[in-house]
Image (cartoon, rainbow over all chains, first blue to last red; front, side, top):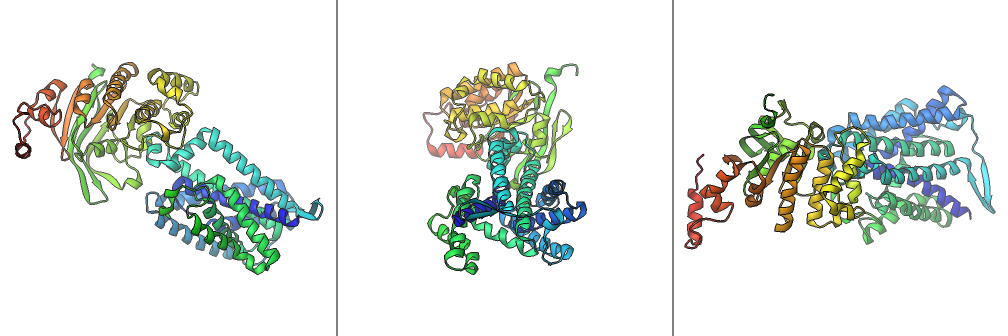
Length: 290
Length: 272
């Protein structure tokens, strides 16, 4: 039973991280390889705000949300905007450089010491026994709930709101979208904002659950196979892919060794690439672009 | 403003477009579109028609193209090298030659994507009625994906999404491409009706000269990136070279061999 709970929590974490990969890729065909760093920074935002405000979890989280969202906009307007129209490879390399830069900044500002934002928030991460023989931490529950909420909101927006429709339109045919009066920069910035927000949220919850250090970006890297397995341009594909990868990882921890678990997502990825290179729900033609 | 009907809406002067910083696509095209007219821009493949339209409607970074010389003026304002969404908001809306609808969105969704110039939300329903009035077919396929539409329906949807933007000047690239003669006639007539009822000016780029001249008030012939001939439809229709090469009704049709055509092509000259 514990295995099932662990898989669900880990899958939720991956879903939360990957939604940003997919959003940015769908809107602007850019693969954001600085995603793990955005996640780490989200965690540090919460840590800093928590110290500043002290024992006020609601406000701390809200402020950290706003910072993450703003970070996404800033990255777009001061960096990625200038890459619009350049080749996809150039843009991807810029995000790699951005990732290295952010990693350096994180170590510079917050040092590589292990941090626990939870202390400063004045909250406790207790274990709950939900069914016989399975426990889940408070922030594990928070992770699952926020993932479900975020995906629900995103799906509804993409289907029923005007800006959601326009976002899909921009992703599908930017030239036509622009000719129909849509300002592309606005929607690209929006995709970066939501992506930074969602991955920052993942970073915050993860930091509360198990502490924070600059190496957290590795989780973002491990989440990368999930998007590829799900198909780069498919938000719906992320969910089953996250479960597959999480299952592989948890089973490896349980039956082989915890050290081997780091490799498990990539083993899944490689077998996926051999069988169905465009992912579970991806579009075939998208393959050449990366 | 004495005669607003004949006011120049769009004027192009010595337009030059350069792709990828090296290749020049349009060499010094000049023409103008007057208010409330339907103007046809005729020419064969690769003459520079589409490039001219794209230059008017704006290039994106991915196009890697730029207007390097000349002027594009819309209602007296210079609009070259502005982004497409800016130009759309000025009131120039393009119906492109291909990729004219969002294939993964339904017909209804396609119509909602367009940013309307008219601000009020209340007008949303009016627009829908208007579109259904002109294109009743679209009402029946509202839930279909854009990618599954027939060529005619697709063209109608493209025209509709452009109309939702509320254009003053509608640019139409190859209305007739890939469509049967009946539907082409129908669409051409619709354009004329829409022009009259919606106070829209139309610039029509066409290979199908015969169909375009049916409804046009004025026509230009573009070749190798230059305007080589201009006039009203009758003048164009009666010009020997146009008859021969655009309308396929040369007088010596019967006695001509392929060799003659080739020779004639080489000596074709334009006089205005």
